[in-house]
Amino acid sequence: MTRTIFTALILTLAPLAASACPFHDAQAMSCAEGTVFDADSKSCKVVSS
Image 1 (cartoon, rainbow, N blue to C red):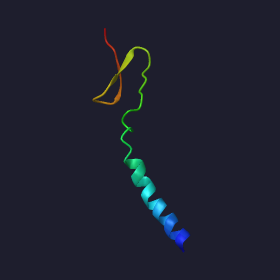
Image 2 (cartoon, one colour; image 1 turned 180 degrees about the vertical axis):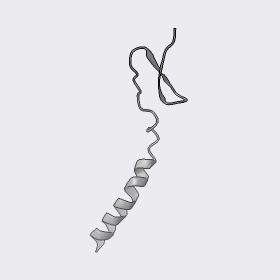
Image 3 (tube, rainbow, N blue to C red; image 1 turned 30 degrees about the horizontal axis):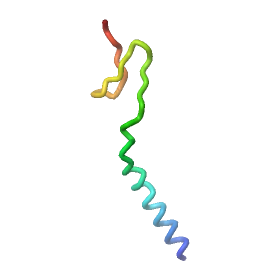
Image 4 (tube, helix red, strand yellow; image 1 turned 90 degrees about the vertical axis):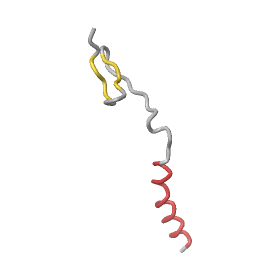
């Protein structure tokens, strides 16, 4: 019975702990040559010269 309650508690709290990670927006973004990362659209944009 205790094992079941403990397992249920862990399965309930694990997603909450993962969503509280403050570093999920700090991922490195690499763009192809000739493009730069646009933070507003969160995508690579072609550099016009």
